Image (tube, one colour):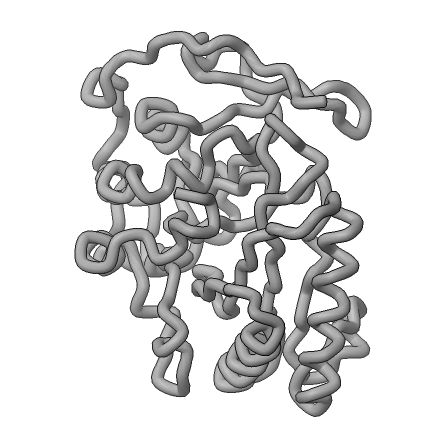
Length: 292
C-alpha cells in the first residue's frame, strides 16, 4: 500500500522564504557562501525537483559549513518546528516511526538549504509505491584505484546494457566516482531489481576482473573499482543528479552524455559555478529516468 503523507498546504512564494546568514562561508577552501549555495539550488530547481518529488529524503546538513571538525547531521526525521506547508511522510524506522520530508516544490527546497542542507539523499522509490524502485543504480566507487579505470568499467557496463537493449544514464557522483542509472521497467520489486543488477555487475567483473570487483570488504578489493549495487533496496537512499557534495570546491553530481565518458572526463569541473550554464544549454540529461 502507498505510504500516507500529510496533505498539501500552500507554501509561501519562494522569494518570501526567509534566508539567513547568506554571507557565511560554507566552503572555506573556495570561499563559497551560503548565499551562493542557495542561488545554485534555485537555478537548478526545475531539473532537480523531479528527481526528489514524492521520495522520502535524508538531509546531509552542515549548518556551519564544510571542514574538519564541523558538525554534520544525517537528518531523516523532520523537526516539528519546520513549517506545516512542508509535506511529510511517516514510515517505520529502526526504533520508532520517522517523519521524512518530501521536497516537492522550490519553496521546500529553499527552506531546507537555508537550514544547512548541503546534499539531498532520496529513496529510489516514491511514496505511491515504496516497494518498487523507479530505477536501478550502479555505483562505481574507485576507492584507491584510478579514475581512468572507473571510466573503462562504465563504458563496459554501457556496452553490456546496450546488448540487452537497456537504456542507461551516466552521471558523476559529485565526488570521485560515477553512477549509472537504469530505469526499472520490468516487473518486480526491489528484490527482483537488485538480483538483476547483481547479474549485470557480475558480467562487468567477468569482463574486467583486473580492475573491477563486487567484493564488499574493502580489504579484499585491492586497487580494483567497486561495482556497488547494494543500495538497490527499499528505504536505501542515493545521491541524485544536481545536488552539491561537501567537497572543497562544492562539486555537483552531474548527468553526462555517454560520449563524455572517456579518458578526458574530469568530475572536478562540475561545480556550482559551472553546472547552471550546462543545464541551461543541455537541459536535464536524466529526465527520462524519472519519466518526465
